[in-house]
Image 1 (spheres, rainbow, N blue to C red):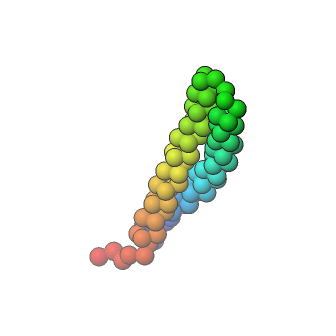
Image 2 (cartoon, rainbow, N blue to C red):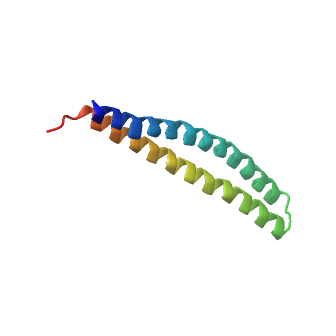
Image 3 (cartoon, rainbow, N blue to C red):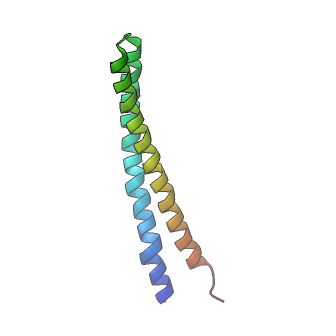
Length: 93
């Protein structure tokens, strides 16, 4: 009983909460990346100066890196929950 409770409290619940929170922010970052990339394309199509292109490129790269980090934390949280579920489903020898 203590083993099951420990797995639920320390692995499954935090893992599922992490998937929900980090997944939500990954979707928020995805929307921000789409807007930043549209701005980047608009700056390029307007034949703006090199400085404006660098700023727009840096802005969309910031969102790209944030999305990568949020996606990584989402997957790591899912793995934590899966390890906890696996621990519940296996018998102790």
